[in-house]
Length: 275
Image (cartoon, rainbow, N blue to C red; front, side, top):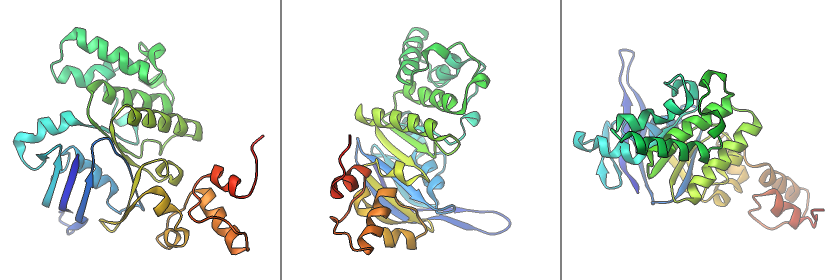
């Protein structure tokens, strides 16, 4: 469980202070899959870094599994609970061999070698990268590198995984593969926090936070958020293609049910059968 209470973060510099988070409040239950969306500068990545205490609150509080992240004695336990995957895997890979990179975090935890080997093998199998364990990461594609970064987090066996735009640098196929892995991890009971610029990805979550100006301005299910097409457009967001097309068809006089979100729902409403 993650709870934020009036969370505020200010970046201070000689050029002046910048408020990145401004009174953020939320509760994420254990086992939830929450997507966070927002335009550039909305505070998404700053918020992500608070989940495992890479950043500490300027004021307010954030609790991870009941632990106050601002208390120094809690930092180790917080970081044991929360794994992070960022958008550029090259910035996360530290070893010259794939299996050594996946083992890196476990070695820092002092896990015994036999258990490290078991966890690394299981993690590589989970991301379908077992055949590449002796490869140099530099020889892998962007999507494969991101799988290795995810394997490193899986090996740590954290309860919570935060993905900060993990598909931003990937092609459509790579994005689908990573999102499929995220869904599998959620199905296994992990709490998933998924930051993305791709609305179709956000629409697969259980709940969506919409951020603007360092605040969470909307909090609801994907159906509640994305089928309000006019409002999302006003805020500067795209919406899933099916939701937007359904809205356009309604304006042209088509009698369609409200809150259509997926292509399958739209096809059914139009009487189109899949061959």
